[in-house]
Length: 203
Image 1 (spheres, rainbow, N blue to C red):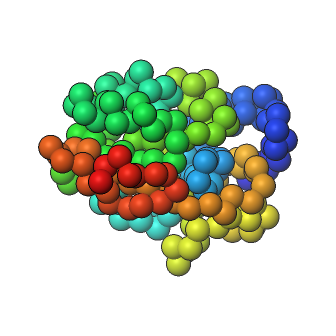
Image 2: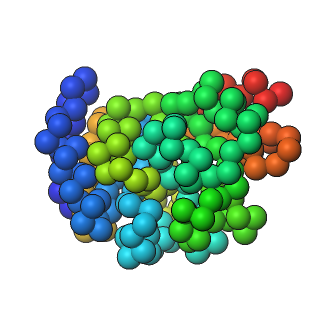
């Protein structure tokens, strides 16, 4: 695994470009978000997706969310009601995962049984630049150990995942809360998990 330490205030463009190259070539990376570190790949690369399922030791029924390049692209990947659009517009980018009806653009491996998908636009410059440079969404699933515990220390992550992923963008300790998960796929919003983001507008 190639391990690159980002500058905390001015992340090195060459490191981000390297991560983009790895993803475009079908690789799997670990990258920082506004909550925890994420494991990601291009959502359209079947082999890379399979690797993440194996790395995470998850069944194929597991719903992985993904980061989209820009809010204006959201209707490309999900069916969005007027209410959902207005709600998300107020909160994104931010520490939220929104569950929405999937569009045909999204690979079915990322659909839930209810034909929904989880979409993120984290408020983190590195994450946003990655997806914008790639031009397509990347998987967003938290870096955890085999017991399901979230790993926040870059040194520990390096030790655990060395040989499993191709590259890591290290950005210091990320010990926040998980994203808040809001289901906007039905007529009424449902807060599935209250995490880092304020969910008071849905109460």
